[in-house]
Image (tube, rainbow, N blue to C red; front, side, top):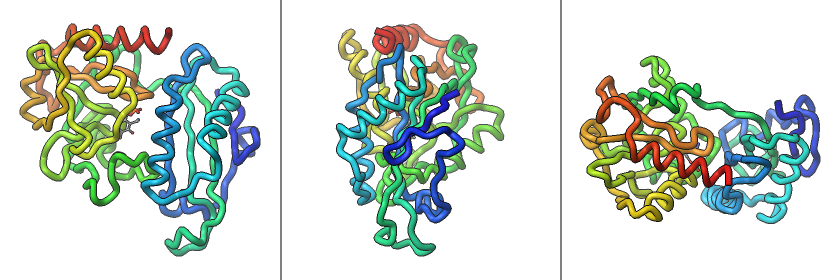
Length: 285
Ligand code: PMP
């Protein structure tokens, strides 16, 4: 259990880590966040996460009251204070306390907090045998509404799809975009393998530009596997040889059933296993 939370410059006990009920992060989901992993005490791709945090903040016109270097140091300090070698770190920047109206200009002090804890998103057994997912009826946010590239505190879109997944007895749901193409899952990016080529939806499909996604693309290209960022339909998923999801918390997890249909052989495939293995090696290096 993480015991120290970094809150606006201080490391405080978790019971003392409190923010105002007038914070627009609470009232309106007005804020941004990041999820970062540490492996063996080292922060995985910290710079990429800090950069995305600032991009998300810019996207919602929120000025983070710290420099990227200060945030990076605060993250490292939080990790050190919690004594967890392998952890999941949540960095959150809210608009801050304001009035009950929407006007963000009434919120003068953004709140910044960093939580360091353990995370186990899926049971280990699913990493070996694969996950079953459904396609959600809830579509992914339109990029011209709340752009999925923003890692904002407004996760209701994803939560609604997650509820559908849970109702269907599964852990995850594939979300389609406003054009009917595959976007991503509620907290993970999606890949398929077809004829030894890796396919994943492009950023323009309305997805979060996942850092794990980026790492997997790099790993695949480095080993000579062709990677194509292309629009995918549900049909493409159903006829895929393999499918897997990527995310900071989930890492790389095989998908073996979608909408009750077995994918490929109905068990984790060789390309998925190879990429997951190399991802493991890189994170634990
Ligand atoms: N899509 C969504 C909606 C997410 O919330 C996340 C992060 N959990 C991802 C994709 C994966 O991104 P990353 O690999 O950077 O964690």
